[in-house]
Amino acid sequence: MDKLSKAQKDEFATSFAVLALYDGGAEVTSSQINALLEATGNTEVEAFYPIIFANFLSSPEKISELITTPGGAGGGGGGGGGGGGGDGAAEEEEEEEKEEEEEADIGGGMDMFGGDDGGDY
Image (cartoon, rainbow, N blue to C red; front, top):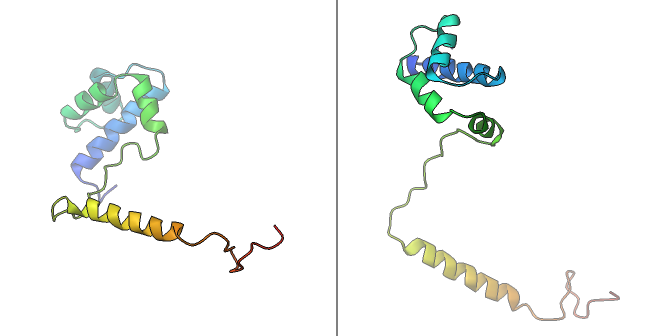
């Protein structure tokens, strides 16, 4: 916890307060979050965190969805290094079509082991 920034500590404290309220069946409001933060000695949390968290997580359904969704609140990783216009997707599709045609043009009677007649099957 020593390596966390103040903002990260504030976010964790607020998150844990929301989870405690949710687990206890209490209503999640900014005043409830503030009361819990004060009760746990987290009095230096920036005032906007409880407001933001209460507005976003106002219903138990939202909180349970956030808990149960895999990768729920993780930030999406950066996109690929896009760049050279929109031709890349079209080229990729053409290559895939060519590969599919080549795969489909194997011939009829070849089996998995290289025989021509398919064996006794």
